[in-house]
Length: 234
Image (tube, rainbow, N blue to C red; front, side, top):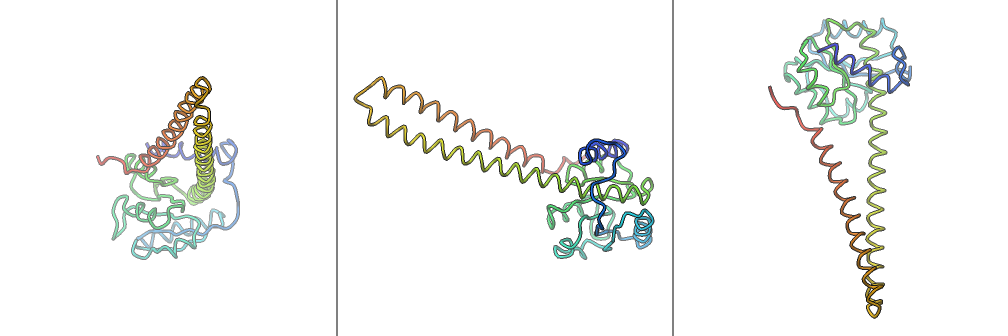
C-alpha cells in the first residue's frame, strides 16, 4: 500500500514537472518548513538528513501541536508532521494544521507504516505520506519540493475555477436581463398573438437554460464539499 502512495505522489509530480519520471521538482530556491516532531532524536536526524541532501531546506521544529500557531505557519512554505504527538493522535494534527492554514502544503512523515492511515491522510489533504524507515533525506527533500509545487498548481487551478464560476454568474445575470427585456417586448406585442407566443416559447427556453446552469453550479459545489469530508472510520 505504501508503494501505491509513492506511485500516486510520483504521478502528481510528473504533472508538475512536465511528465518526466526522473525530473526534479520545480524551483530550487530555499524552502522553510515546520517540522512537527515530538522525538528530539528523530527531529535532529531529519534535519541533518535534509542538510546532507543538499535540498536547501530550513527547519522550524515544534515538539507539540500546542506550539503551532497561525503566525508560525505563515512563515513556512510547508509542514512536515508526525502522527504520534503527545497532544494529538492519529490524524488530529493534520486536521488542526489544515484548519489553521488551509493553503499550506503538508507532508506526513511518520513511523506508522499503515496503508489505511496513509490513504486517509491523502484524502484529508496531505500532499504525501512517507514512512520514516523507508525515507532518506533525499526522498524527504524531494517530497517537500513536490508538495510545495503541487499545492501552488492546485491553488492556481482553484483560482481559475472561481473565475469560471464568476463567469457563469455573469452569464446568469445577463440571461435574466435578457428575459426581462423579452417580457417587456411580449407585453408590447400582445396585439400580435403569433409574435407574443414565439417570445413566450423563447422565454421558457431561457428559463430552462438558467436552471441548467444553476444545477451545474450546485452539483460542483456539493461535489467539492463531499470530497472534503472526513473518510468513514474503520
